[in-house]
Length: 142
Image (cartoon, rainbow, N blue to C red):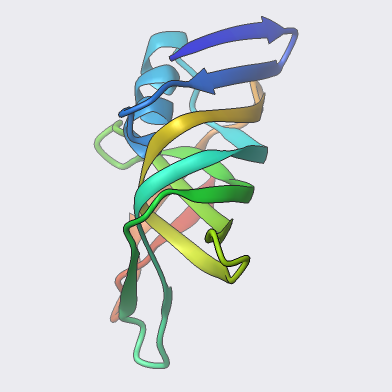
């Protein structure tokens, strides 16, 4: 992974075999921010696990193993109550037959490249906290 910064904007290139969540969490720790908006992302990934939250608040997971075009990526980066970087990302992929797959990203390994724009919210603190009866960690602001 490499990145460049212009004021509060970061542009990140994630390289083959790197996992997107892990890379962005490491970047948050390296730079030391507590809140950011992930505004866009494109590239080609594989070993994607994605899904949605069902009516009972439980995530349903799907797998898209083959290399696929990362058409769109957005989300945010916050901290958990114990200070760990936490990424919440939604994505849209297109497989080689041009079928679209979309939802909450649990895992995505870069196959060729991922290029991601992040806006650091330098005056904000965002914390992810457990929510009763949901698998989701809720977002709180300080």
